[in-house]
Amino acid sequence: MVRKMLLLFCLITVISLSALSQTVVFINAGSRAAWGNQQQLLIDAGGNARYYLREVNGPVKDSIIFILSATQLQSFFEKAETSGFFTLNTSYDGGAVDGAGIYISLNNSGRKHSVSLVNTDVPAINELIRWLNSLLEPQKIVINYGQFVQSKRR
Amino acid sequence: MKSASLILFILFVNWLQSCGPSRRFGTTIERDENNPCQINIIIQVALEGTDADVQAVKNDLEACYSKQCFIPCDKDSTKGCMTKTTIVVKKYGELKEEERDAYHYVYMVDNDGLPSNAYIGTPNAGASSGTWRRNAAPRVYCHEVLHFCGLEDKYCSRIYDPVKDSVIIELTCNPPPEPNGGNCCTPSATDTRCSTPCDGHDHNLMATVGADLSCQNILDIVRKAGLDNCPLECCASGKTFTKPPPEIHVTPGYLHFGDKNTSFGAYGGSTGISIKIKSSWGVGIDAGYYMHTEKDNTYKETSGILTITGGVKYTGNSPAPSKLIISGHAMAGIASYSQKVTVGNNSNKNTVTSAHLNIGAALDLKLNRFWNIRLLQLSYAPTFFYESTQHNFKANAGIVYKLQKR
Image (cartoon, rainbow over all chains, first blue to last red; front, side, top):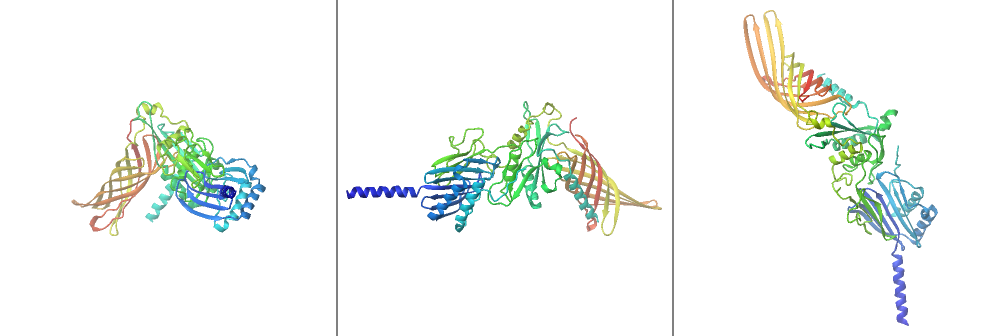
């Protein structure tokens, strides 16, 4: 009986740890060309975050591992819900080539959705990333997919 | 005073070169009106940015697009046509309203590490646009201009999504197949986005900015305009494109000769031949004779200066529509200075020789395939007679004949 309970406890622990290490936020932002910088951010359900800045097909230029609190992570998912992220199309393309963009993939308690932007702006994504950048401010990380540049087309 | 005149002349020539008539499209591809064996590619870009942006982009693009490419004839690949690319970069705000639609529009922004972008344009139809980062890596602007001219990227890319544990197809090769067995490349949890050149494009500027602009890129552009062929008249015989023909010039002129001790003006002329060894560079020789006579009753003094020089000649790339051709020359050789003094029935002749330099510029007006008018040629032509330096100046005008078959 004790052995069975111990086995069950271990199983629950492994499942829980596995769930906590499941990536729930993934962002790849920056270059959409074969050169230039790109940023990637992975956050698991436990708030463990890994950030890399690297060149496309090139070396890592910067990286940091940090923790977001459960409250911060929850606030991010709430922002995703209120900004309408989960109802957006999966892809938005501005029509230009090369340039910059962002790929966001979220798993909010089993509700998964991903959105890709290339050389364009979507207000809901801008709002969500603005919120995320405020959470990342202590780490001096700014997710940049070209939203700070007012791209002009004649 | 003479130096100031020379500077004013150079400024005037630069102004003349910059004010050729502009084309109707951002990218114009057409056969040269005087030479059907030459295809002119004129790319006009207007920057919304600073003067420094205009200069930097102009320098970058001119260096990249200085290449001339050969289009062989179908039946004889030793004969064919040539391309000539002219890049015009201007500040958007300085264009007249009616000129703006004929320029690709580029919005310059600070470099934040992200790539520049461009919308794909069409040759001989309107103009395109893009947003470019300042101080971009070499060849990036060159790559983006190829997009303006209608070329597509030749790389593919993939993103690994760890939330879905799946690889997302971002860009595919057109035409297929994808490299690496159809997978393009393999992103991972630590390197979530990868990109690789499409098959056969490892050294193509449309796949990587590590590659130089190639003639294949140029020919791809020309193909977009349907001009990737050489007309029969160029492939048959006489009009076949060959290296630019040698040129003979005959230019009467004026020489101001002298130093602090003596000086005079002499009239005469120069003649010579120049041979192109590259599209812009050539070598040449020049011979001249200038004479000055002073008379006073029974006293007569005749001075003659014979010059023979050889050296290099550079011909600038003027905008294709322009018929003005500017060239510069730097030559070295010898000068012979003879003085004959006659008093009554007695005469005395003295001849000395010296090293001689001949440095200057010329402005030609192209009349047809055979003839140019040399509107003006100014040269600084120092000599070193009598252990002194004579700072001589020459001004010539005349004709230039191109030695080619009719």
